[in-house]
Image: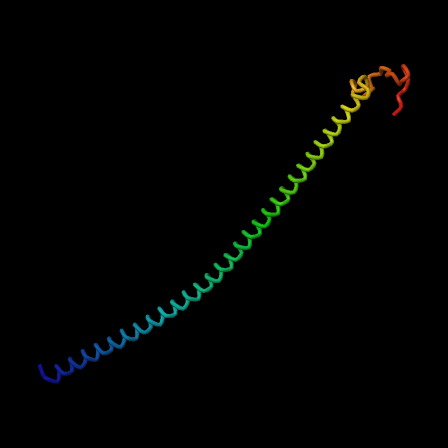
Length: 137
């Protein structure tokens, strides 16, 4: 073979290798740019999701606080109702005690009147009621 053919083949091979190298470099730059764009998209998506997560967290905390506040209000109403019930029970006990004391005094004063607890509804005439007559109330 002639020298010029060998030189031509070498020049063509070098040119092809250079073209191949340029093509690969361009592809690498394009791939790198695509990866950077994907990374930016992921960062934007991450920021949106972070903001959404913070919003959801704040809503959850607010809901929990509202539930705690409502539970405290219910407990306070229950406590007040129980206190009122205890006070009423104490008042009822005082009235029952006073009634028992009055009944005991009445029995001391008039033992025959206290036997029927003062209720004359049986139709029998008492010592101060006329027989067969209407009772005065």
